[in-house]
Length: 239
Image 1 (cartoon, rainbow, N blue to C red):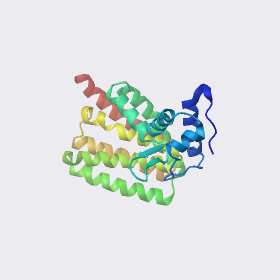
Image 2 (image 1 turned 60 degrees about the vertical axis):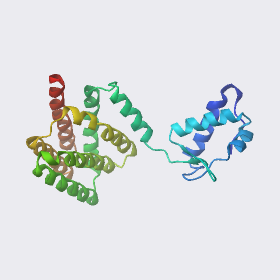
Image 3 (image 1 turned 45 degrees about the vertical axis):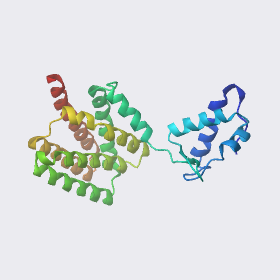
Image 4 (image 1 turned 135 degrees about the horizontal axis):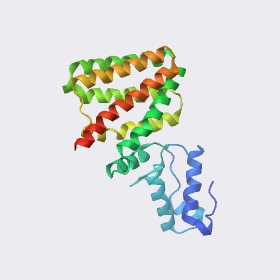
């Protein structure tokens, strides 16, 4: 399976070879790589080089190092977890501003809603209706249920991304939704009026999707993001 590492880029070559076998499916989730000693012989490099390569693969989320008897480097499926962590760090260090995020989200959420209007099936619509009903319950309960409403809002956006049947949209939407709460916590006051306003936006988007009105769904989603970004910008200026 593996070839001796190229001498001019030993460490990188080992990472790339193992990564390629994982991404191609030759190495599947739950499989274990050969032991460090065996890898050392296969690649014809030092154990230190093997350990460095395994650390990089672990950082990428492609392997998990298990210690103890029966341990070793176990293959994991590629996930967005590491990307999510990286984006969260960027946000905490203010490398991604509210303006950066809103500029991206207006187009992105609009495209997702448009594709959902084009591709939604009956089962998808039933799922959206259930989420919408939960959102309505929390919106009517008022500010004391705002955190639950925002979690439901997150579920709504993730559901729309799944309806696109495009794993890239779904993965990026998950990254955005996992990291946007730091803005909500500091910049978005969700009183009774805004909860109902947010719910009405979601309801109208679902109605447009049901009608298969692609451009209306796009416009509603874009306007939804723009309006709540405006609220956050206003709070940001006051601080």
